[in-house]
Amino acid sequence: MPGRKTVQNLASWAWSSGATSVGLLVLPLLVPEPGPLLEGLAVVLIGTTGGIGRFAAPRWWVLPVRRPV
Image (tube, rainbow, N blue to C red; front, side, top):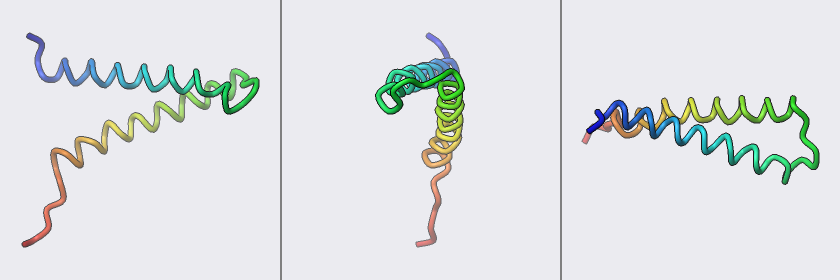
């Protein structure tokens, strides 16, 4: 059975690939004829958002803010 790190890496890769694919499929619905520059910017934006999410999600789950009781 694969280790926990391997499963996390596979899930991260699947999420990133899926988000990028969906973003590129939705882009022509928002812009009639997106050029290569706009597609590239969309990929960068999606990748940056995914990177922030991969940092923030564990931060919220693993290290929640504890307030004094």
